[in-house]
Length: 420
Image (cartoon, rainbow, N blue to C red; front, top):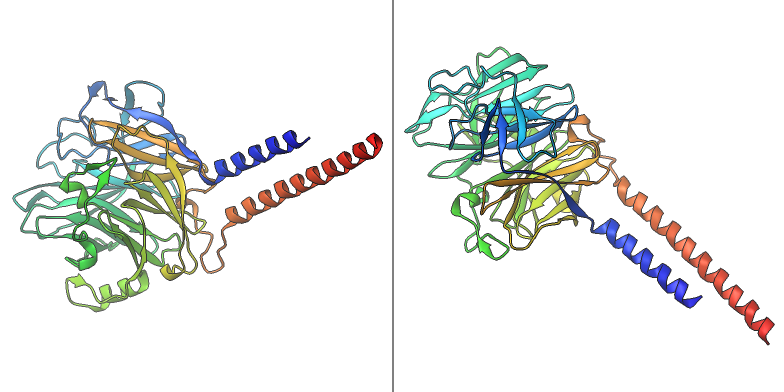
């Protein structure tokens, strides 16, 4: 009887450990892609999203203008060479210098709950001058709905990294770096296309710089300098808070969007900087920030190959409940760089890059979080439902164990009485 109880304890401990520290499973591998009949082994994936059981990918062309398409989708998951179909068609994806209306180099994109796809095209620039300016194109069912051009004045070449859209307020955040500094563009999308105002948010601010003496290492190897320039940004699901962090920094910051937008409207300066910034400590280099509709903030940790989550109340960073959530199931000899995340159908998908080879891998794990594009549960009265579910499961298991132990002890006493 004692052996049975010990065996049961082992099962329970293993079960609880598995819940609390589950690992991502490898979902698919990209080492070659087939776009419109042509196979490529040199490419970069800018971002991934899922819609209607299709996976959409952006393929920036900055280093390879020969790619047949810069934005495409696929439903293949097991093929060695992934077959992609250009979106919305092959002709609009044609790369030609000076043909600015085409998709030249899509660095990132978003899909909202209405099925609209927002593409950020970095355009084409040379010696600090945009031959074709960056643009935001909005599609639905392969039909172009709207298009915004951004005329950015800059004396040196800039590299756009990623973007966020505050659809309710018509603002777009774009993170970038140039030879002088890293920064965030904040753009108001004028629906009449007459006044798309562009301002810099915290340009050359100390909080947008890497920490002195911080050396980014993954599996003991130092990453190249360009990876230290990448920043991560996120927007709370209720749109009330804007988050950002630097890879080579131990801090994560947030600002209230109402303060940002108020300064944007009232200040004549081209840089927004006088805003209250809240901060919290994190224990890993961060490459991406995304928000779930349950009020949880997720970070991808580079050095420890983990995904972390924060439980927030009222977007107050001082009330962070920080925890390690999932760990990547990777081989130690490879350098894995988890730099993009997304939710879809109750799963968290994580895009990683092998920095030694041009190989991308996607890992997935079920976390019972709906996609952040499907609404927001509301932070002011938010509680972590998953925690209470786990707590209930724990007490049920504990009740079962106690019942089992008490019944076993009663049975042992009965046997001892009979023997005596």
